[in-house]
Image 1 (cartoon, rainbow, N blue to C red):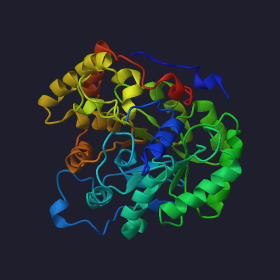
Image 2: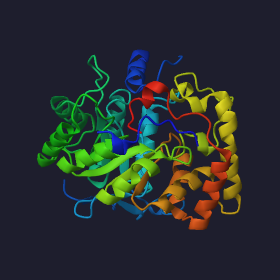
Image 3: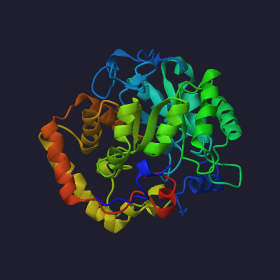
Image 4: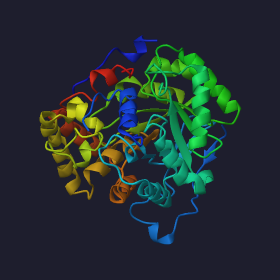
Length: 387
């Protein structure tokens, strides 16, 4: 698998209602130019009805992120909400996505991910509206770290973190953020200052748990020494396995959970993309190397291998991707995203499968022989991750 590595981490300390808002969000995320507290458990959901207690649910399937002393116990699969408002071409209407989030909760999902930069702002508003009726039964993760209104790309200064926390609380219609993550490491602000600020927010009850996104091992260690890190969120899939090499041993040593975003490689491994898919009209994937037509044509061979593997097991490619990482590591919570109920139920059913070690070895070997074409990010976005 081709790797785009800056340096080894152990060796280094929405779419808004206008096109302008969309491009602002895209710019902050580095997407390039495009055309066109205490332990809490969220096991009981009052919206659950009898006819939904079956296939496509994750009822009573839980995982714990963080230390045994103060874990964040949540559903085994989290729902990513970013694509409901930006980054994926044409988006469904607002009420349809409110309903989808509530349908996910009906089916046992009690962990939902958003960020202020998604939109910007409107994604948090969507999640807040959808979850308001059941707020005490679910956990929400959101993120800070971008300078949306200012002149800089990054901004994790303590005063800015506090400002974002207050604004996110209002948009989410809540009095606390269950997991507050630094969206990208800010090279201009010591991570100790970031961790110290979130630690103060935890003391004030406005935040319950601290997290990092796309941080390297040394940054994780430095942050954790100031304020316990409950979870690290990074991209992880059959096509992006660098976390295994660069941070997993650190996470296991420090009892830190891992939230795997893009477990289906942004939809590529779901089998819904071809080399002819339109990824250039308001779709963030169009500017990234592995989604160029020639790369897609090659990478679809991985989908074919997954299809072959799943034929005798009654599994779709999406279910294999999610079940694979859950079977390998108990500290992982996959974070797929979707705008369709059918895909939601398909992804949730992955929790019903457990792959054996021989099966894991088999599918990993097949994919390794095929190889991955294209880096996961363009140069700009890659420069904002630590491995």
